[in-house]
Length: 319
Image (tube, rainbow, N blue to C red; front, side):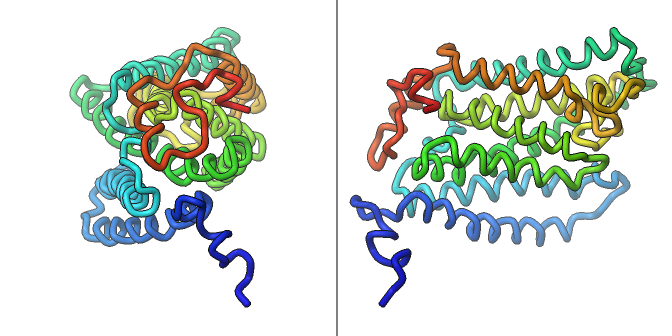
C-alpha cells in the first residue's frame, strides 16, 4: 500500500496538474542542474586580478540569473501549463514605473538611515580618492556585479519557488519561511551577527510584500539593487559585510555597532530594523500599489491559481 503522500489525491489537484507544493519542490533539482552547468562554464573562465569582483563572479552572477529563469520557464511550461509572463519579469505596461519606484525607494531608504548617522557623528564620511576614468570603470563594474546579484536573489527567494508555495499555502507561511532562509544564507557573510541576520529576515519579508502587492518582480528587484548600490558604491558602506573596491564616498563607523551596524554595514543597525518594519507595515496597509491590468490578465488566464489578482485590495492581498 502506497503512503498517502504518493497517492493520486496527494500528488495531483482536480485539474490534473501536480499540486503547487510538489511543483515548488521540482524547481530545486531543475535549478541546481542549471547551476551545475554554470559552475562548469565558470571553471573555464580566467580568474583575472579582480578577486571576488573579477570576471568569474561576473559570469557566475549572470549565469545564476539565467539558470533561475530557465528553471522557471521549464516548470511554468511543463508543470504549470501557464505562460512565462506569470513569473513577473516581462515588459507589461507599468513595469518601468515599478522598477523606477524600486530604484528610487532604495535611494531614499538608505539615505534615511545614513543621514542621521552622519549628522550625529556616528559614522564618518569623506570623499573617496578616485580618477574620473577609474570611477566610470568602477561604476560599470559595480552595476555589472550588483544587478545580477539582486535579480538572482529575487528570482530564487520571491520567484517560482515562492510563488508556487503561496499558491498552495497562502502568503504568510511561505513569506516567513523563505525570509528566514534568506536571512540564514547571509549569516556566513563577514561580520554577520544574529541581529544583522534578523534584519535580513525582515528585509526578506519586505521584499516578499513588494512582490505580493504587484504580483511581479520589478519592484523588489529595483529596490534590492538600489539599496545595495547606493549603500556600497554611493556611501562606501559594507553591503551585508562586503565592501566594494570602488566608491564615491568613504564611510567608517564611529558610534556603537548596534546603532551603525559596525563592519557589517547599516543592515546591522537598529535604524535598519525601524526602516524595514515601518516600510513593510505601510506597504501591507497601502492601496497605492496594485496589480496592473496586463499582469492581472496573465495571472487570471488558464490554470490560474486560486489567489486574488486584479480585484485584490490591501486586505485581500495579505490576509
